[in-house]
Length: 183
Length: 189
Image (cartoon, each protein chain N blue to C red):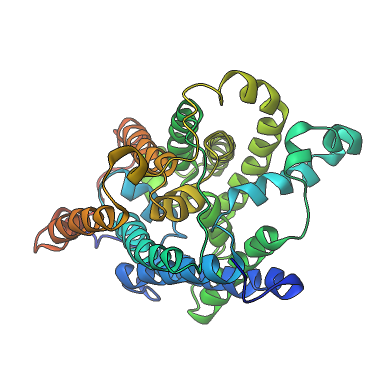
């Protein structure tokens, strides 16, 4: 039997998950106390999608859209937080020498084969559903899952539990038949 | 409440805070497709351990800050239909994508090309939501809209009582996961 997490990027640089969780908890103290912002990702990301939609819908189409009028693209705290998240992960990846181009992850390949196009298509559709769902729910794993749940918000616990049940159901349906023979 | 830091400096704090967030996601292992998907397959409980610990440590601290006047709450409204439906779509999407919005961004930095493609999908999802926003607001977000409710409001159990309940639940879950030969340590294949 293979060890639980058999990919190189995961084996070396990892910290204890409870320590990481506590770190995220302390980060939320700092964010609440110092900048009076909730911790979140998807709001700014949807604002960024407005900037990306300009060539598609025209600047008028974007600037008159009710959602983007409410959530306009700007380099505010939330948007810079996304830049920081990318930089932090990049620094950590480089420091641990775990940068590795990945097109098809091993668990995916085991069930759905090595096709890059197939993996990319599903990742794209998954990204659409993830973002659409996050905006409909008013937050994602950060804004609802961590930041909202820790404030004991009814909306956030509803999100956390529903998301988890939907995810487990989807994964159970999806990962039924191995494509490759047992390693 | 008065913020200790204001103006431009406040905005730029997003960079160190974001960096800390990104480092923690990467070092936690959750910028990895296999780890996220194996959580939903109930074969690797890293995501749950991290999130539950973050909620408890964060919750106790933020509650103390709130009670001493050093923090305000930011409660998202409990539009129960929109939240439930959105969360269900999110859960399905997260299994297909293999990341959530934050871990997807962190994963791009580790070299995951499918995380990058899914990130473009997320931008497309944001566009689709913006285009359907008016309809969703008018027909969906006003159904079972309970307002900015917190668990103490609807249960009568006070804040610290809820923190105690969460700590007790976490203690049981973590004990089950960390037992010798517990489910999390069996093969993640």
